[in-house]
Image 1 (cartoon, rainbow, N blue to C red):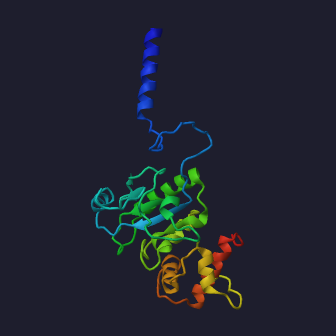
Image 2 (image 1 turned 60 degrees about the vertical axis):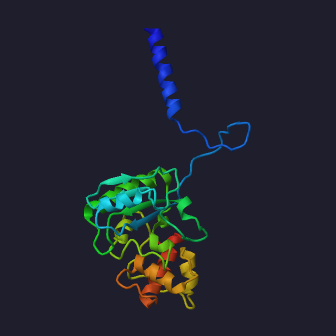
Image 3 (image 1 turned 90 degrees about the horizontal axis):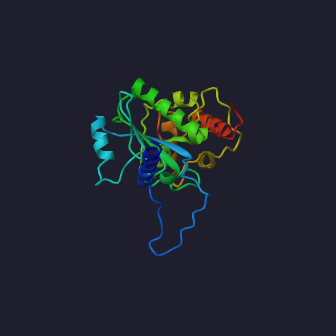
Length: 248
């Protein structure tokens, strides 16, 4: 019996070893001396998208088609079903040409979540409930900063407009995922530089009107024109204070 147990245990070890991913090594002869001082890629951002499709089946076909250079870590259907498409340790192709603050490779620094939505419809409650559950799980494991839950439009102003104006950013913020400010917001000081403020918040301001529209799509929503009203400026100033931790 003991011999049988040893044989079974040895078989299990061989099976586990066979299933474990091999380390990526150089293509020329080297001496492998593994160091314990490393860890897996840890995301620092979550980027939220809408698919632009009418059904989750269409979205799945697109996101799993080897002929298309697009993917995401997760896809959430309208009914709340969550599909995982890419290992969190891997780099999914969802952000494209993008920038937030000094980071210009958001694919490498983020997890991408696609929501099954055509862009012209509200997001169903079941879908948002599933999203909140997923975000909570991600935050517990990676401790993503509150300000780093963003939309695709935030990191690619002028190029992307997802998630749409229907997305409930305020609801996410009440659960600790992203920043939000309501009126009455504090008035900015005299000489408030809105372009510098947008850049400090994280927006790419190489195209200022596009940055303003992206900001307003996220935080104003009922108006995405490329001009800031006094109300918009108060919200922008409030968000800067919140990001700095000056407001609770």
